[in-house]
Length: 357
Image 1 (cartoon, rainbow, N blue to C red):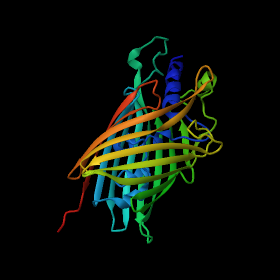
Image 2: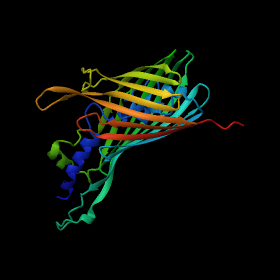
Image 3: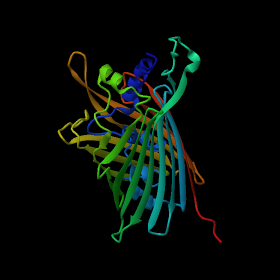
Image 4: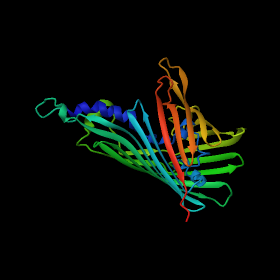
């Protein structure tokens, strides 16, 4: 009986954080990294040019302005229940090739484990409660290179995924990304093929700790097999730099995310192809201070009266940059205006060159 008490917790966490489906998974890798990008609604495929390119489009690493670039980010979602952390580093190998590394963690910690709450005599003993974490990890190794065609660059990611639910279950996954960027005067174009070979997560379950038959009878949540598949996505974008006045300038980018699972309630729905647009704007003063806006995450929602409505996610952010240090802030909700749950996201980036002899 004591083990059954844990079932509602596992059902909540499974649905809340990990939501397995037959066609796609690893949705934590769709959140994004860097407060600059989040404030621009992730419209960053074409203009990304720093260490965060390892996530957005590895081809952007070829635009690094210094020999080394590093960044960190921390964000909390759902009133601090879930925590999202990012650490990235990149470096120039030579004048034409670049290397980057990215680590991402999205998790819920300190979850009560009540499997042993009731002792062998049937007594409730709260001292027997332990705690565990459920978290997703991703490690990306990026390589980028300039081609012999002027202003055309490419990059690729190797991804290793680890997902763990305490001592109850864990999974390992592997995937590949491929990206391109092209510059034409004030225009930049980008394309990013994520999970080009599909990303496969192989799960292992500890049946001694996780009562599969109870899960089966509860909500049919026990997995039919131990394999999750993340289908490929194609992200394309176009951005343009423009002058505003004196030392003021700006950038605008429009991205289109193409998914092929036929399960997305986005602005342009289709089976199997759906298209999710998002727009970002950045205004800067002398490359020192930045003001950013974005709109995206359009969702078609069916109300209780069966009427369909459209929601969207507005974003806002600011940033400062001085002597190689960039501090960025983003204010974003979780995609449903009716909830009004806003997250404050901060990221710091440091760029520097090798010491000259």
